[in-house]
Image (tube, rainbow, N blue to C red; front, side):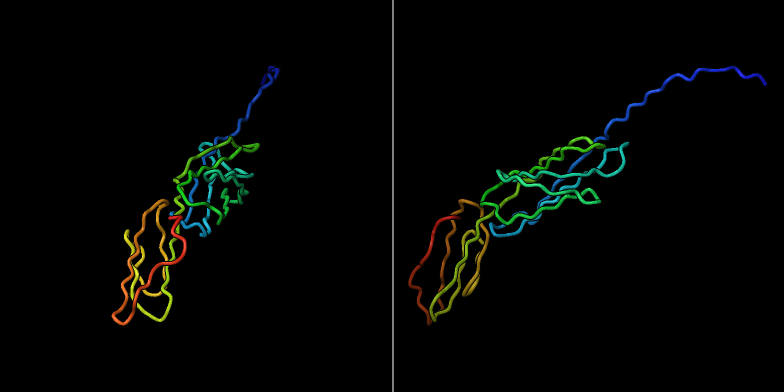
Length: 173
């Protein structure tokens, strides 16, 4: 056979970064001020991209900003127990890496509730009940309430006991 010499033309292929997607969750939600809340962000490739993004995710909860590193499954986890009472917006941002583009998401708001703890002192006995519902107990109990809630606690002493009054702080709920 005859062969015809050919000149190979240069061919350029540009490889671009794959798009990424991010989700964020928080648990428990709602939480109390002293609860440890776990924030989880998952970063994944958007098809037709493949592989797993690497690097850090920046979480923003209200005015609190913190970071966590993605693990081998594309998941970043961080815990906080210093959130203040109120409803806080939750977001997560991934800045991208060599192979993946940046991604951002607003998650569900984190509802941090105030905890009202009550107890009976002395030798008497009875029941404590709140309105709105939450506290319904004997000697000691607590319940979470939305910020700025007005909570009325009613003490009902047993027949042989006497209720003499309240003591302690009355703000914060």
